[in-house]
Image (cartoon, rainbow, N blue to C red):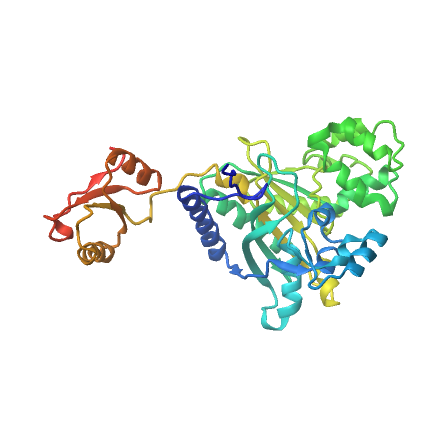
Length: 420
């Protein structure tokens, strides 16, 4: 009995029409980022296991795919089993994001890079997720990062470039949610969360949209947060806006005023873009140190991208602090919302030929059409011509022509629109 042949769970094949839509979107994103002064780099799909598990990736470290060492012996297996440390058998791992590889890349090549480096990375990453709709084990990330700029210019460039990319894709009307890790630290301090438990507390707050204020409060209680009104405070925080310190009003005790004023300055620097203050915004990665942001759209119940400042990560590899800030578009979330646009795309035609025609004659016709800038495919004539034409239309072709023994040159072809 034949077995069903499918990709590994959480990974996908892409048919030609799907691949075309993805490549169109990627080309638009690349083009916009390049015009904003970013340069594309490429890093290996694998990094040292110790680097991927250095405490920088938050919960994503638990989802990293490990690559086993070569030449593992029975004794190695027994030692790993006895210690309970499965990672002792691995020396490499598939990257779970593009930020850790970028930090390593910068530490490796700093001497060859400009003082302020603006990087594009567009590549697949892997996480051992539980596959479900919209969540995959292999997916593409589209990142831009600015390394070496400590001021707010970095955040402003990232935000404006990302909004421009989404506009170019046809996703206008996006809004930016802003917060700062310093503000989150103030909130946790006001609740009495111990320093060594704050990363875990932030992971819990990051679940607010999934388990609600009461669920978050219950989890925080296991971390020693004993305030009875935490759920009510979370509801108030979720409704906070830019009026917290307006008109001489007494700001709440948890509000870090320096961070809040920095966010206001960002808001005022990009007029015409909707920017909301959200003190419950966390961004789950453990490496963020300051400003954090997400892109939201009123038509979708999920973020279209996010990022923030991670000033301490590169210092872990370089031994010297270097400011850094990045933004990642959620490519898999947006690509299915897009249609392949016709502008700039060459006319795509199919030549349906009779089986008895000489290959050299067919190739001559193809070369004529290619020289005029067309995309050309051969299809041998089939009994079910309608089915053939429906298939190539679904593959993105615009027109077709019949090639017979009477066809003399490309000018004698009579093209008919597909789908008409």
